Length: 185
Image 1 (tube, rainbow, N blue to C red):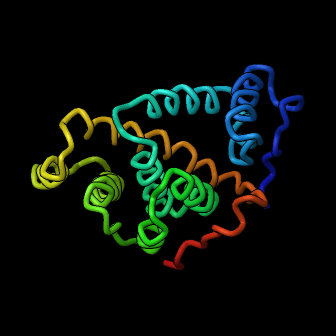
Image 2: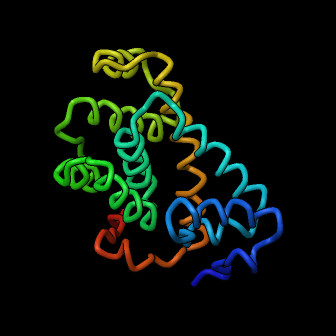
């Protein structure tokens, strides 16, 4: 059981409140993971700043959600897997592709597979990807700049994935249908 509170806008530190208001406006609720991250204004504001830039990148929302779901699975972040499964489906990622990612496999869609593989490889190799890893990504129709954008998505999701592991946020009702449990290692 986590001792980190699920903050409301009113209970959060003053410097965290604007981010929580923005999330409430964006999602119609404050995601529990953000409500727990709000205990640290440094963390929640850094998270929001990077996520705003990630969502303004050259990648589509479906591609970003594919990356975020892959990262959550790779980092065994149960809350984030459920949340990003729901968002990926909302953004048009096929259910079969989300299920593949949730099981540690690559999507059938070639471009999504290239994104998912690069993200997983970046995490597993701690950023030390090979020229071959990069070339496979480029061969799928992406650019060198987009390799760097994928790194930004991995960095942003690492904040939430690690925060979820530390603070153990409860899963909100709208995401319970997508609950996921990390395989025992």
